[in-house]
Amino acid sequence: MDKEVLEKYRKAGRINAEVRKEIQKILKPGLKILDLANRVDDLIEKKGARPAFPVNISINDVAAHYTPAVNDATKIGEGDLVKIDIGTHIDGYIGDMAFTYCSQPSHLITASEKVLEKAIKIIKPGVSVSEIGTVIEETAKAQDVGVIVNLTGHTLDKFVFHGPPSILNIKNDIQHKFKEGDVIALEPFITESNGQIKNSGTVEIYRYMMDRPVRLTEARNILKLARDEYHSLPFAKRWLYKKFSPIKVSLAIRQLRMVEALEEYPVLKEIEGKPIAQSEHTIIVQDKPIVTTRLSDD
Image 1 (cartoon, rainbow, N blue to C red):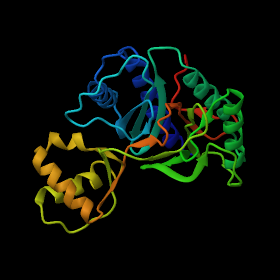
Image 2: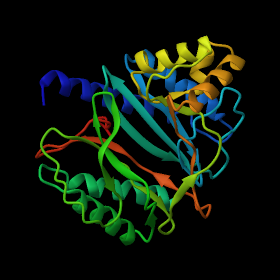
Image 3: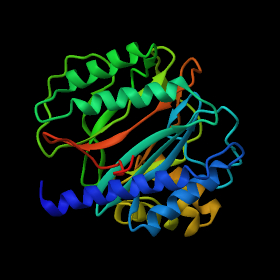
Image 4: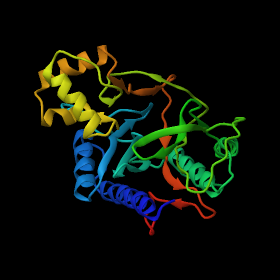
Protein backbone atom coordinates (compact mmCIF):
# COMPACT_ATOMS: atom_id res chain seq x y z
CA MET A 1 0.00 0.00 0.00
CA ASP A 2 1.23 3.48 -0.90
CA LYS A 3 2.53 5.37 2.17
CA GLU A 4 0.26 8.35 1.55
CA VAL A 5 -2.79 6.10 1.27
CA LEU A 6 -1.77 4.22 4.42
CA GLU A 7 -1.49 7.48 6.35
CA LYS A 8 -4.96 8.56 5.20
CA TYR A 9 -6.43 5.26 6.37
CA ARG A 10 -4.59 5.67 9.67
CA LYS A 11 -5.80 9.26 10.10
CA ALA A 12 -9.42 8.39 9.31
CA GLY A 13 -9.28 5.52 11.80
CA ARG A 14 -7.59 7.62 14.48
CA ILE A 15 -10.22 10.34 14.18
CA ASN A 16 -12.92 7.69 14.38
CA ALA A 17 -11.41 6.34 17.61
CA GLU A 18 -11.04 9.85 19.04
CA VAL A 19 -14.70 10.57 18.32
CA ARG A 20 -15.67 7.36 20.08
CA LYS A 21 -13.63 8.30 23.13
CA GLU A 22 -15.24 11.75 23.34
CA ILE A 23 -18.84 10.65 22.94
CA GLN A 24 -18.40 7.89 25.53
CA LYS A 25 -18.13 10.72 28.07
CA ILE A 26 -21.68 11.93 27.35
CA LEU A 27 -23.51 8.62 26.89
CA LYS A 28 -26.21 8.15 29.51
CA PRO A 29 -29.91 7.35 29.81
CA GLY A 30 -32.00 10.34 28.77
CA LEU A 31 -29.61 11.53 26.05
CA LYS A 32 -31.45 12.33 22.81
CA ILE A 33 -29.95 10.35 19.96
CA LEU A 34 -30.36 13.35 17.65
CA ASP A 35 -28.07 15.34 19.96
CA LEU A 36 -25.63 12.43 19.91
CA ALA A 37 -25.69 12.24 16.11
CA ASN A 38 -25.12 15.99 15.75
CA ARG A 39 -22.23 15.75 18.21
CA VAL A 40 -20.63 12.95 16.17
CA ASP A 41 -21.01 14.95 12.94
CA ASP A 42 -19.48 18.05 14.53
CA LEU A 43 -16.51 16.17 15.99
CA ILE A 44 -15.70 14.45 12.71
CA GLU A 45 -15.65 17.78 10.87
CA LYS A 46 -13.66 19.59 13.58
CA LYS A 47 -11.01 16.88 13.57
CA GLY A 48 -10.46 17.25 9.83
CA ALA A 49 -12.39 14.32 8.38
CA ARG A 50 -15.77 13.82 6.72
CA PRO A 51 -18.50 11.33 7.59
CA ALA A 52 -18.26 8.18 5.46
CA PHE A 53 -21.92 7.56 6.29
CA PRO A 54 -24.44 8.93 8.78
CA VAL A 55 -23.77 7.66 12.28
CA ASN A 56 -26.01 4.65 12.96
CA ILE A 57 -27.55 4.70 16.44
CA SER A 58 -29.46 1.44 16.64
CA ILE A 59 -31.20 0.44 19.87
CA ASN A 60 -31.98 -3.05 21.23
CA ASP A 61 -33.44 -5.25 18.43
CA VAL A 62 -32.50 -2.71 15.74
CA ALA A 63 -29.23 -3.88 14.21
CA ALA A 64 -28.29 -1.07 11.84
CA HIS A 65 -29.28 1.84 9.57
CA TYR A 66 -31.12 3.86 12.22
CA THR A 67 -29.98 7.44 12.07
CA PRO A 68 -32.23 10.06 13.65
CA ALA A 69 -34.60 12.19 11.63
CA VAL A 70 -34.36 15.96 12.00
CA ASN A 71 -37.17 15.98 14.59
CA ASP A 72 -36.37 12.65 16.28
CA ALA A 73 -37.22 12.73 19.98
CA THR A 74 -35.88 9.25 20.83
CA LYS A 75 -33.82 9.09 24.02
CA ILE A 76 -31.48 6.41 25.33
CA GLY A 77 -33.29 4.38 27.96
CA GLU A 78 -31.99 2.65 31.07
CA GLY A 79 -30.59 -0.75 30.03
CA ASP A 80 -30.87 -0.10 26.29
CA LEU A 81 -28.28 -1.74 24.04
CA VAL A 82 -27.20 1.20 21.89
CA LYS A 83 -25.06 0.33 18.87
CA ILE A 84 -23.09 3.34 17.61
CA ASP A 85 -21.54 2.81 14.17
CA ILE A 86 -19.29 5.64 13.01
CA GLY A 87 -17.69 6.13 9.60
CA THR A 88 -15.05 8.72 8.77
CA HIS A 89 -13.01 9.35 5.66
CA ILE A 90 -9.97 11.30 4.53
CA ASP A 91 -10.12 11.86 0.76
CA GLY A 92 -12.25 8.73 0.45
CA TYR A 93 -10.12 6.45 2.65
CA ILE A 94 -12.42 5.15 5.35
CA GLY A 95 -12.37 4.25 9.00
CA ASP A 96 -15.40 2.19 10.07
CA MET A 97 -15.91 1.38 13.75
CA ALA A 98 -18.81 0.42 16.00
CA PHE A 99 -19.34 -0.23 19.69
CA THR A 100 -22.28 -0.86 21.99
CA TYR A 101 -23.21 1.21 25.02
CA CYS A 102 -25.43 0.09 27.87
CA SER A 103 -25.98 1.72 31.26
CA GLN A 104 -25.92 -1.76 32.82
CA PRO A 105 -23.45 -4.65 32.47
CA SER A 106 -24.24 -6.76 29.39
CA HIS A 107 -22.86 -10.16 28.51
CA LEU A 108 -23.82 -9.49 24.88
CA ILE A 109 -21.45 -6.53 24.76
CA THR A 110 -18.66 -8.48 26.42
CA ALA A 111 -19.20 -11.37 24.01
CA SER A 112 -19.23 -9.14 20.93
CA GLU A 113 -15.92 -7.58 21.95
CA LYS A 114 -14.32 -10.98 22.61
CA VAL A 115 -15.55 -12.36 19.29
CA LEU A 116 -14.14 -9.39 17.39
CA GLU A 117 -10.76 -9.55 19.14
CA LYS A 118 -10.45 -13.29 18.45
CA ALA A 119 -11.18 -12.69 14.75
CA ILE A 120 -8.66 -9.84 14.50
CA LYS A 121 -5.93 -12.13 15.87
CA ILE A 122 -6.10 -14.42 12.82
CA ILE A 123 -5.94 -11.62 10.24
CA LYS A 124 -2.87 -11.92 7.99
CA PRO A 125 -2.17 -12.30 4.27
CA GLY A 126 -3.72 -15.55 3.05
CA VAL A 127 -6.51 -15.77 5.62
CA SER A 128 -9.81 -16.75 4.00
CA VAL A 129 -13.40 -15.61 4.46
CA SER A 130 -14.16 -19.17 5.56
CA GLU A 131 -11.54 -19.08 8.32
CA ILE A 132 -12.79 -15.75 9.66
CA GLY A 133 -16.42 -16.90 9.69
CA THR A 134 -15.50 -20.09 11.50
CA VAL A 135 -13.59 -18.23 14.23
CA ILE A 136 -16.44 -15.76 14.73
CA GLU A 137 -19.14 -18.41 15.00
CA GLU A 138 -17.12 -20.76 17.21
CA THR A 139 -16.05 -17.93 19.53
CA ALA A 140 -19.68 -16.81 19.84
CA LYS A 141 -20.75 -20.35 20.72
CA ALA A 142 -18.00 -20.51 23.35
CA GLN A 143 -19.55 -17.38 24.92
CA ASP A 144 -22.97 -19.07 24.81
CA VAL A 145 -24.36 -16.49 22.37
CA GLY A 146 -25.31 -16.41 18.71
CA VAL A 147 -24.76 -14.14 15.71
CA ILE A 148 -26.97 -12.37 13.20
CA VAL A 149 -26.43 -14.76 10.32
CA ASN A 150 -27.40 -12.41 7.46
CA LEU A 151 -25.18 -9.48 8.42
CA THR A 152 -21.54 -9.49 7.37
CA GLY A 153 -18.21 -7.73 7.46
CA HIS A 154 -16.83 -6.24 4.28
CA THR A 155 -13.88 -4.66 2.52
CA LEU A 156 -13.13 -0.95 2.19
CA ASP A 157 -11.60 1.02 -0.66
CA LYS A 158 -11.46 4.63 -1.80
CA PHE A 159 -15.05 5.94 -1.52
CA VAL A 160 -16.21 2.30 -1.24
CA PHE A 161 -17.66 1.68 2.22
CA HIS A 162 -19.04 -1.84 1.62
CA GLY A 163 -16.91 -3.70 -0.90
CA PRO A 164 -16.74 -7.39 -1.81
CA PRO A 165 -16.41 -10.04 -0.66
CA SER A 166 -18.90 -10.17 2.18
CA ILE A 167 -17.21 -11.55 5.29
CA LEU A 168 -19.74 -13.90 6.84
CA ASN A 169 -20.03 -14.19 10.60
CA ILE A 170 -20.81 -17.92 10.37
CA LYS A 171 -19.06 -21.00 9.02
CA ASN A 172 -18.98 -20.96 5.22
CA ASP A 173 -17.06 -22.33 2.26
CA ILE A 174 -15.92 -19.02 0.71
CA GLN A 175 -12.24 -19.54 -0.10
CA HIS A 176 -11.40 -15.94 -1.05
CA LYS A 177 -8.04 -15.15 0.56
CA PHE A 178 -7.09 -11.65 1.64
CA LYS A 179 -3.75 -10.24 0.58
CA GLU A 180 -1.37 -7.75 2.15
CA GLY A 181 -2.75 -4.21 1.94
CA ASP A 182 -6.41 -5.22 1.80
CA VAL A 183 -8.60 -3.17 4.13
CA ILE A 184 -11.44 -4.96 5.87
CA ALA A 185 -14.09 -4.18 8.46
CA LEU A 186 -15.10 -6.99 10.80
CA GLU A 187 -18.40 -6.47 12.63
CA PRO A 188 -19.97 -9.40 14.46
CA PHE A 189 -23.55 -8.72 15.57
CA ILE A 190 -24.20 -10.76 18.71
CA THR A 191 -27.52 -11.87 20.17
CA GLU A 192 -28.76 -14.55 22.58
CA SER A 193 -28.99 -17.18 19.83
CA ASN A 194 -28.50 -17.11 16.08
CA GLY A 195 -30.88 -14.62 14.52
CA GLN A 196 -31.71 -12.78 11.33
CA ILE A 197 -32.64 -9.23 10.37
CA LYS A 198 -35.29 -7.85 8.03
CA ASN A 199 -36.00 -4.43 6.57
CA SER A 200 -38.23 -2.38 8.80
CA GLY A 201 -39.02 1.24 9.55
CA THR A 202 -38.64 4.65 7.98
CA VAL A 203 -35.70 5.28 5.67
CA GLU A 204 -33.44 8.20 6.66
CA ILE A 205 -30.25 7.15 4.81
CA TYR A 206 -29.73 7.34 1.04
CA ARG A 207 -26.90 7.06 -1.47
CA TYR A 208 -26.35 8.29 -5.02
CA MET A 209 -26.83 5.56 -7.62
CA MET A 210 -27.02 7.24 -11.02
CA ASP A 211 -28.06 10.42 -12.81
CA ARG A 212 -31.69 10.41 -13.87
CA PRO A 213 -33.87 13.12 -15.42
CA VAL A 214 -36.17 14.69 -12.81
CA ARG A 215 -38.47 17.69 -13.03
CA LEU A 216 -37.91 19.34 -9.65
CA THR A 217 -34.92 21.70 -9.47
CA GLU A 218 -34.24 20.68 -5.86
CA ALA A 219 -34.19 17.02 -6.90
CA ARG A 220 -31.52 17.75 -9.49
CA ASN A 221 -29.52 19.74 -6.94
CA ILE A 222 -29.78 17.03 -4.29
CA LEU A 223 -28.67 14.39 -6.79
CA LYS A 224 -25.67 16.52 -7.73
CA LEU A 225 -24.86 17.03 -4.04
CA ALA A 226 -25.06 13.28 -3.38
CA ARG A 227 -22.78 12.58 -6.33
CA ASP A 228 -20.21 15.34 -6.03
CA GLU A 229 -20.06 16.39 -2.36
CA TYR A 230 -20.89 13.08 -0.70
CA HIS A 231 -18.97 11.19 -3.41
CA SER A 232 -21.67 8.52 -3.67
CA LEU A 233 -21.27 7.67 0.03
CA PRO A 234 -24.45 7.40 2.13
CA PHE A 235 -25.99 10.59 3.50
CA ALA A 236 -28.67 11.43 6.03
CA LYS A 237 -31.90 13.09 5.00
CA ARG A 238 -31.48 15.53 7.90
CA TRP A 239 -28.23 16.84 6.34
CA LEU A 240 -30.22 18.18 3.39
CA TYR A 241 -32.20 20.58 5.59
CA LYS A 242 -29.11 22.76 5.90
CA LYS A 243 -29.55 23.72 2.24
CA PHE A 244 -33.16 22.93 1.31
CA SER A 245 -36.58 23.36 2.92
CA PRO A 246 -38.19 20.26 4.48
CA ILE A 247 -41.07 20.25 2.00
CA LYS A 248 -38.72 20.49 -0.99
CA VAL A 249 -36.53 17.72 0.43
CA SER A 250 -39.50 15.37 0.82
CA LEU A 251 -40.70 16.06 -2.72
CA ALA A 252 -37.21 15.73 -4.17
CA ILE A 253 -36.46 12.46 -2.36
CA ARG A 254 -39.77 11.04 -3.57
CA GLN A 255 -38.93 11.90 -7.19
CA LEU A 256 -35.42 10.50 -6.93
CA ARG A 257 -36.66 7.27 -5.36
CA MET A 258 -39.26 6.81 -8.08
CA VAL A 259 -36.63 6.95 -10.82
CA GLU A 260 -34.16 4.84 -8.79
CA ALA A 261 -31.52 7.58 -8.76
CA LEU A 262 -30.94 6.97 -5.04
CA GLU A 263 -30.39 3.79 -3.05
CA GLU A 264 -32.32 3.47 0.21
CA TYR A 265 -31.06 2.01 3.49
CA PRO A 266 -34.05 0.72 5.49
CA VAL A 267 -33.72 0.19 9.21
CA LEU A 268 -32.69 -3.42 9.95
CA LYS A 269 -34.43 -5.20 12.85
CA GLU A 270 -34.06 -8.69 14.30
CA ILE A 271 -37.04 -10.72 13.12
CA GLU A 272 -37.93 -12.03 16.61
CA GLY A 273 -37.17 -8.82 18.49
CA LYS A 274 -33.99 -10.14 20.12
CA PRO A 275 -31.59 -7.45 21.43
CA ILE A 276 -28.27 -7.14 19.62
CA ALA A 277 -24.76 -5.95 20.49
CA GLN A 278 -22.18 -4.99 17.86
CA SER A 279 -18.43 -4.43 17.82
CA GLU A 280 -16.45 -3.38 14.75
CA HIS A 281 -12.95 -2.33 13.74
CA THR A 282 -11.18 -1.51 10.48
CA ILE A 283 -8.08 -3.60 9.83
CA ILE A 284 -5.31 -3.32 7.24
CA VAL A 285 -4.14 -6.82 6.35
CA GLN A 286 -0.46 -7.36 7.11
CA ASP A 287 1.64 -10.00 8.88
CA LYS A 288 1.01 -7.80 11.91
CA PRO A 289 -2.43 -6.33 11.12
CA ILE A 290 -3.02 -2.62 11.65
CA VAL A 291 -6.26 -1.81 13.50
CA THR A 292 -6.77 1.77 12.33
CA THR A 293 -9.79 2.50 14.52
CA ARG A 294 -8.06 1.78 17.82
CA LEU A 295 -6.10 4.31 19.87
CA SER A 296 -2.73 3.24 21.26
CA ASP A 297 -4.09 3.40 24.82
CA ASP A 298 -7.18 1.29 24.09
